[in-house]
Image (tube, rainbow, N blue to C red; front, side, top):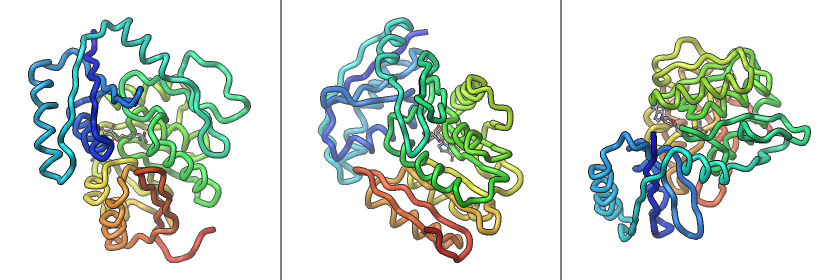
Length: 286
Ligand code: SAH
């Protein structure tokens, strides 16, 4: 298997919207290098269709009032070239108070809890702000929540579920609508040698039972949509960490969460991104 590497010059204001579209189309991952955005697709995609779809985003961006003026080029990468460019990119990252994300070829986590994540095929390597924000919040929530059960909606690489297991949640369930993410997260759970994580293809409505904590790092439209279900799947006094909203979009998510009976206990902004801790119940947590 090989890959297509897209190099995009995108106005800052349009970057996230464009990447969200690319991700919907099956983009394996992306990062910024020298002011450009690099994005990767498997070569099973029809490159002409892919190219035309990327071109058409210009109108999609303009329709949402964003700057649609971007340019791009692409090239084919062999598996080996892709691995090399990918590996160079994935250095260990420390997150929160005591977590560290390591690719499988790194050994040391300097005494921190090591989450081993093969960045191969899915979103969630810790190189994105929303993942890091989510992990920090999950680490924080783990200090006060009940630890019976944790649900990760949209698990990607499995990173949040893996963190939850290390942080002491007894039963961890993870779902993703993307079969590639399901495979990747299973592999990562295996790399970490964890046995209490159940990974399923699907979304929150496919999962049975209720949970002490639910983590969901998803686009705001999805968070809005699943808010009622999310609330109904939380145990009393259950807590949810919501991430993946762009600044400005959090209002809609907060509205949907409150409507569903959840209360915001903490909100954090990091650059363009917003994460929330919401709670089912009425008492403050510090
Ligand atoms: N949890 C990881 C990955 C987040 S990316 C992290 O925090 O980094 C979002 C993931 O959610 C993707 O893998 C995508 O396939 C999945 N997803 C998108 N919509 C979903 C939905 N409605 N239900 C379940 N998973 C969904």
